[in-house]
Length: 111
Image 1 (cartoon, rainbow, N blue to C red):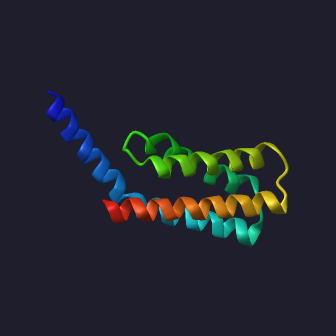
Image 2: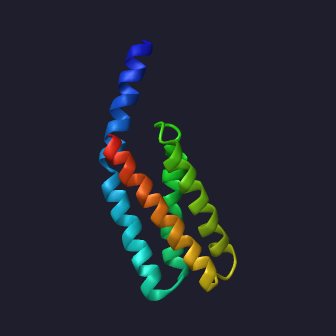
Image 3: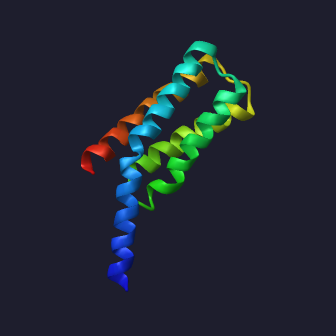
């Protein structure tokens, strides 16, 4: 039974990792929107939920560094959502998101 559980989890992890390039593309599209339009509430909301999903699932699939960076990014975005964002806040979000996309690429490379 334990072997079946590990096999099922490994299959789920593989499927998740295979989908990371699409998630990376989503993050890049949203950050590009932030760069061109500024910190609009709708884009911050979309980015928050995209990052929140990664933060929640990272540890489950053993992607600790990715999950940790997603949590950091999520906190920055949440602060911007609740308060009026400043130029510094936006720069911090963009830098944190770039580090997160680096972690996504590394997870894909490791398989």
